[in-house]
Image 1 (cartoon, rainbow, N blue to C red):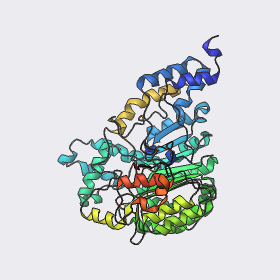
Image 2 (image 1 turned 180 degrees about the horizontal axis):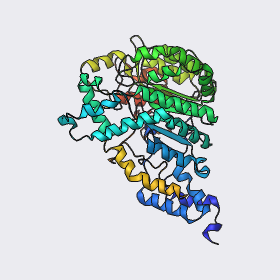
Image 3 (image 1 turned 180 degrees about the vertical axis):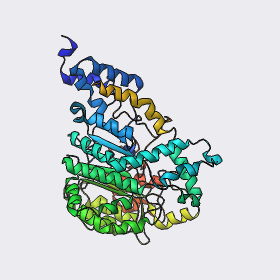
Image 4 (image 1 turned 90 degrees about the vertical axis):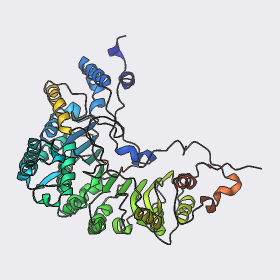
Length: 521
C-alpha cells in the first residue's frame, strides 16, 4: 500500500504533526471562548514547518487539498493596496476561499486633515523625527486617498466575503507601524501641528466597519461572529445613519458580539448617545449566544448597565462579559437573573462596585441561584472608592496600550516586512500555488514574543481567561463540614479586593475547590 492509498483522516493526523493546528472556533460555553488571551494572534508556523507544508501541497492534488486548511482557515489582510491585492488573489481561487473561517481586517489610522501637508510637517526634521522617511508618509497618504476614492476596498471586500462561503468570524483590528506611532506621539506633544496633519482612528474604524458590513449583507454571508478590540463610538454612531433594516439584518444573524470601546475623551457621553442604537441592535439579536462589551481599564464607564442593554433578555445566551464598569450590585444580579436558565459563563473584568454595594451579595446570588453557571471570571474587580484612591495616588492600572503611546508593543515597520513577502506570495498565487501564510502579509505573532513584527493593537482583550492551573476544574469541591457554604468565608470587607481573594471567589461561586487547609476532625 502506498501513501496515496491511506485514508484522508490518517493523512490529516500525520500532517498535524508537522503543521500548526488549523484554527478551530471555540465553543461559546467554554471559559476559553472569551479568554483574555484569545485576541492574541496565533504564533506563525516555524519556517521549516511552513516549507514542509508548502512542499507537501505541491506533491499532488490530494495533498494540496489536505494541506490547504492549514494555510487558509484564517486570513488576515491590511487596508493597503498590497493587502487588498492579496485578498483578491485568495478570493479568486475557490478551493482556497471556501476554507476560510475567520477574516481579520487590520486597519491603520486615517490621515484626515492636511493630507497634502505631511511633507511640510517633516521637512524641518526635528531630532525626534530625524530618521523618518518623508516619502513613506506621502505614499501612505496618497494610497489611502485613492483606495477610498475609487472604492477599491469595497470592491475587493465584496468579492472576498462572497467567496468565503464557510466564513464564521470577522474582526476589525487597529494597527500601526513604528513610524506612524512616532509621528502620532510627536503630533500629540505639539498641539499646533494638528493644523498640519491629523491622524484619526474614528474615520478609519467607521469606513472599515461600513464596507465590511455592506459586504456581509451583499453576500448573505453565513458569518455570525463579529469582534473588534478597539471600536470607536463615533464609528458606531455613524452607522445609525444607515437604514434600520440594514442593522437589524446583521444583528439577527449574530451569535456572538465582542466589542471593546475606546475614546480619548467623553466616553460616557458618547456611549450614552449610542443608547437608542444599542437597544435596536440588542433587541434584534435574537440568536445571540455570547456578548462582551468592554472599556479601558483606567477609565471605567459610569453609565448604568441597562443604559446599554435595556433589560433585553436573550433566550440563547451562554456567555456574558463586561469590562471596566462602575456598577451597583443589583445591576449585575438583575442581568444574571434574566439569564439564569441559560448562562454558563460570566465575566466581570475590572468591574468596580459603587458605594453601598458588596461583592458578597453578588457572589452569593451567583452561587445559590445561577445553577447552570460553570465558570466566572473576576479579574481585577474592586470597589470604586479604593480604585479612585489608588488612581489619585498615581497607581498604574494595567491596561492594553493606546495607539501611539510609548508603551505600545511596536517594532519594525510593517511595510518593510510586506515588501519582503508580497512578491513571493503573488508569484505563488499567480502560478496556482498558495503561499504558506494565511494571507501573505506579516506573519501573525505572539505579542509576548520578541519577533520583529508590527502587531495589531490588542485593545480590551475581549475574551475570558482560560482556566488557570490554580483553578483546576477537576479538583473536587470540599464542603469542609459546611464551612465553605457560608458567605463569611469570602472575607469581603467592602473596601478592597485582593488578587488572592478574587481567585478564591471564582472557585467559591462555582463550587470548584477549597484552597484553605482545614483540619478535619
